[in-house]
Length: 275
Image (cartoon, rainbow, N blue to C red; front, side, top):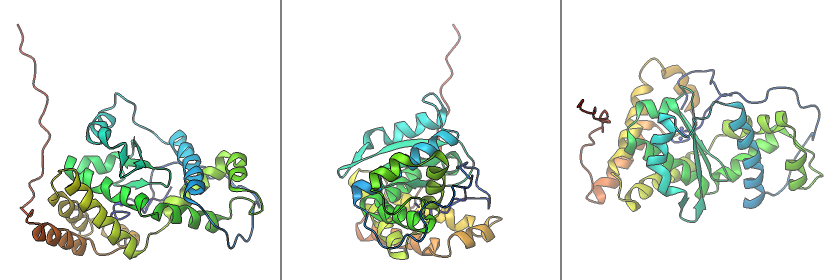
């Protein structure tokens, strides 16, 4: 699956992949001529959530998900265990054990964080990234994304009801829907609004708001390195990472909360003394 979401989906529906060929596996078999020429139709939040859940469940089956005892899962649960609900949104979190620097959220409240992202960001920066992704759900961007994915792929018969579409969808169909959903691009305004949601999420929950600027700064530096050509292609529709970092900084200064961010380094577990 080609991932184009964070971090500048932040960055994270988005957030950023460090390779042109992402490692996520989605159903790639031909699905046949199922609903051609899908044009106008409506999607309620409930219908979008139902379809997104089916697609995410399939992605979870086809990709390496960190188990409960895995260090990545333990870390994420420690960070977000208390955020299974945010502003009335029901959320669920899992880690995909792939090296891509990415994360995404879906209309049903599913949030998936990639191990590669967790390797380069500290806890506060990850909180800022996921806050951004939650913003896409809260602002209905993820509903629009699955609607766009549905229309793009014309995956199911437009004459059937949405519930019938989900119930009758094959695994390969759901896989392709998930691929198209993650591949969907958010507008610059949607990204900017999600950035603001991330800042407010950090502030509302008492986290260091300066981590938002730091997360964008990391992405900006990545765009100047070996990953530049890949990031340029992926981020062409997103606001500049440096600009987003600067805007985050100005928000913190306006609130009297700005201070130079010091990246938090995890301390190794203390060794037990031998008796």
